[in-house]
Image (cartoon, rainbow, N blue to C red; front, side, top):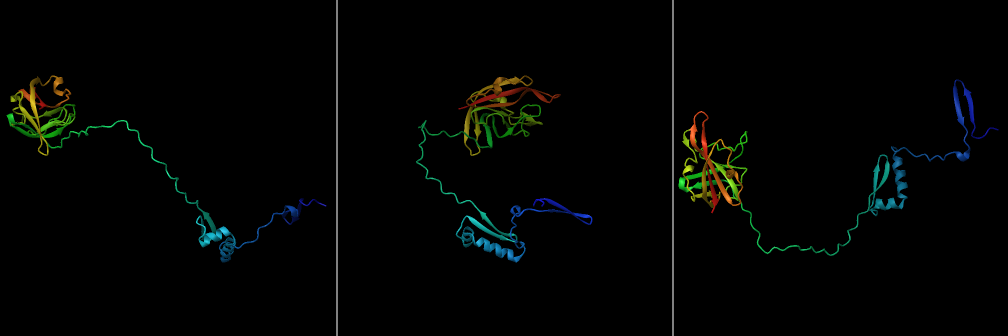
Length: 258
């Protein structure tokens, strides 16, 4: 007798048939036949099966906060979500900071000036608006485009604050006198005023006046850093060269805060 798991070959026409004899103890248990998901009975049977489970039954009735029941065309699914986190433990008493320094004096306010500004030199009749100017393409300090304006070099301290503020103005402009046309006539000790946008004034006094060659490098005193609030006023001077259309000297005036 052939063994129970022997392969028996039989021929039926031109189609060979392979049969495998499997002993009963090795036969897999077939699951019971269930209706297809699109069969209306599948939902009813799945619901009866789900109702038989206590956890699912509590979820359907609202007793299980952590279980959600989802019913769809393909059946019913149970989706669990994590339980809500418990509140954090009560914090202990705060830790006191360590005091390293205690200031007794009042805080010092920062010195500030609001634009626009006005430059006033009463002795030579100057009262002109101050505008900001930067650098030209060749790296020189720019000048105002109108003869009546005073140009503040914006890379220097703002006029009226601590430091050396550089201010330039025209001697003349196409035959018209410029704002600094009379700067060469200013005297030592003469008053110079910076008027702020709110009308407040900061007074200065002329400390020195010098005339330097236009082609020579600017002396260190012109752009030197200073601690006290100071103004350095610059304009053209000397003789005018029609060929180059330039003056051959520069007038430099320094005024220090009173």
